[in-house]
Every structure is written in C-alpha cells, then in structure tokens.
Image 1 (cartoon, rainbow, N blue to C red):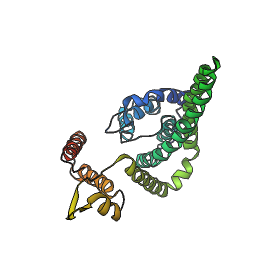
Image 2 (image 1 turned 90 degrees about the vertical axis):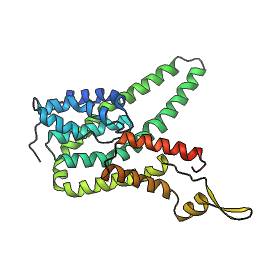
Image 3 (image 1 turned 180 degrees about the vertical axis):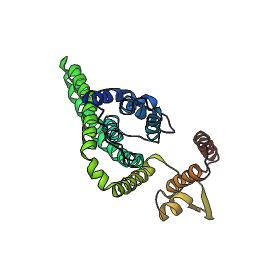
Image 4 (image 1 turned 30 degrees about the vertical axis):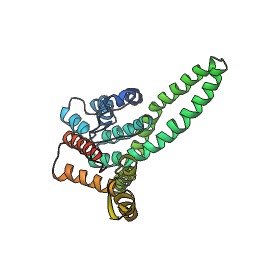
Length: 266
C-alpha cells in the first residue's frame, strides 16, 4: 500500500473514457481485450508516475492478463483501476478485482446495451424511417452517441468509486481479494458450456441392431458437459504446469478437432 498521489483530474478521466473507444482494436485470441484495455490507461499511468518508466511498466504489465468485458462497462473498470493505482494500492488486489469484476460487468453491459437498448432503439427508429421520417436515423444516431459518451460517465463513476472505496478496501483487502477470485472462477466456470462444445459421435455396438452411444448414454448421464469441463482443466494444466505456447496449443486443438471430425469421432 503506497501514498495517495491525487494527480488525475476530471479532464484526465474524461480523456480515459474517450480513448477507451478504440480499445477493442487490440483484440486477439490469446489475451482478448488486454492490449487495448491497458493502452487506454497509459496516459493515466504516465500522469500518475511521471518519468518513472519502471512503475509505468509494472502498471501496464499488471493489466496484460486475459480480459473480455462489455466495452462501455470496461471504462468503469479502467476508472476503478487508475484510481487504485493513483492511491498506491497493492497490484495483486487490483488484478484480482479486475478478474473478479470483468465477467459480471460483461453480463450487465450486454443486458443494458445489446439486449435492451439496441433492439428497442433499432425497432422504434426503423419504424420511423419506414414511414419516411428523417427523425428515425437521426434519433438512432443520437441515442448511440449518448451510449458512446456513457463511457466517460462510467469511467468517472469507477474512478470516484475507487477513491471513496479505498478505506473500505484497505480494511477488507484479504476478504475482497478472496471473494473477487472466487467470483472470477465461478464466472469463468459458468462460461465453459457456452464456449466449449465436445460431442462424441462414436458408439459401441452391443448386440445386433443396438449400440451404446458414448456421448448420450454414457457421458451425458454421468454429468452433462463433463467433457468440456475436463478439456478446460486439461488445457489449464498444459498452460500452467507444462508452459505450452498458447499459439501452439490453439493450432494443435484445431488440427486434432479436424482430424477427429474427419474420422467420425467428434
């Protein structure tokens, strides 16, 4: 825990929210949004640490782990992180908060912007446009301009919450770190069935005219999604204990999947 620096102004947080508009441009399949997410906070880190390149580097490195959240809500997380960096909080605590929050924030942001605001605004404005009113497209652009600018509000809210929550975080750092870690693991675990699908097509012949489906009659009856869960643990083991290169792992998974599909196994 360090000393509170109080170097970021309202203008800096506004700049953070605007810069975050482009943070999806750094997307890749190894770390998802980590590159753009971190790059958006570099001006804030420079303002906090000045010419201390070592601290700027450490702050950037601390945010280069995997992250995938809803873009508007991501700025809330950025505001919270720069606030805690400014306050000199422990970076393990900052990292665990980020890991624990980005999943729930993604769900919240998707529900607000993409499952509610988008269909409602598109439906209303399309109806107006079909009737020949120019208000339809103008209103649609206005709504999404406000949605874009909400990044600034979310960044300010996250920054404000971080500053005001520092004393509480300091008192409960251990419990918060543990809770954030548990929440992050639960969210990632809940996403496994949505992103990983393994279906074994092979069957074992039992008698004439009958066979045992390995997937439906065996794995699905033991525990649905058992194979995706086991696959995730296996890849985690390879990454953590065997230090397998992530690109090599992705290519291997693709090749094995194609081979098993061609052989009629998967």
